[in-house]
Amino acid sequence: MRVITRVLLTAGVVATVAGLSVGASVAGRQSAQDDSGMSSTVEDFSYPGADKVLADRGIKLISGDGHLMLVDCVNVNGLIEVRSLNSSGDHGSDPGHYCFRVSGTTGDLKLQLADAYQVKGDSHAVQATVTVDGQSNTVNVAKNGWTGVGVGAGSDAATLLELKATP
Image (tube, rainbow, N blue to C red; front, side, top):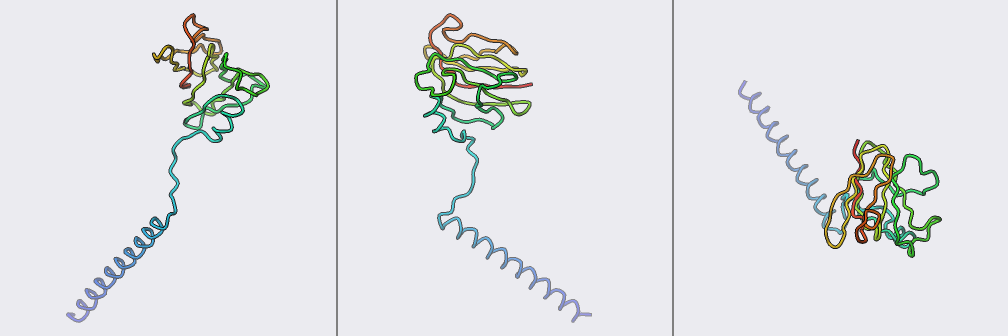
């Protein structure tokens, strides 16, 4: 009986040591890979193709949750729309007119669009954060209707900083 116990005990220690050895070698390989210059994929929520959009449309798209995206204003039904007086850098088919589609129940997009003057909501509850004369404020946008911001609301020029859509 002592021999069997001793064999089982020895086998358990060997298995444990072997497991630790395997684990240590795997961890070593992972560290070697990390040290070799390979980078890991980390989501920073930056807007895909933002540089091209800035060059083509004159709007700086910074980051978001991926559920609020700039789209062509071909069929504007069901889209969030923004009008801006800053159309000199916009080489789109309708300069100064920007449309956004919400692809879920919520959406969030941080951006910079100078001289925004109107925002039209879709069926979501939309909030637009703007800055006017260095003061930021959040404006509730009418569902399926236009809401003035900046000069559209009787104040100075506004820069649109964020659009947020909720149910």
